[in-house]
Image 1 (tube, one colour):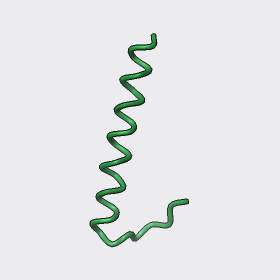
Image 2 (tube, helix red, strand yellow):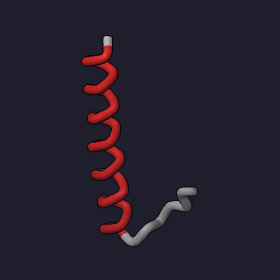
Image 3 (cartoon, rainbow, N blue to C red):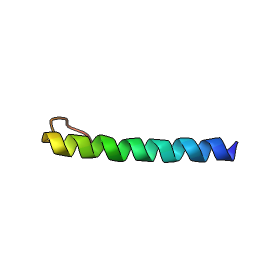
Image 4 (cartoon, one colour):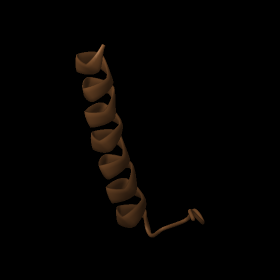
Amino acid sequence: HATIRTYIKNLRKMFTKEYFDNIKGEGYRFNIV
């Protein structure tokens, strides 16, 4: 369903944003391309 796909996409976007914010806050310990 398009609704579920949109929900998952938004969830992944939100998670990625939080994830990168956390990495930036911790001093960028990982090498992410």
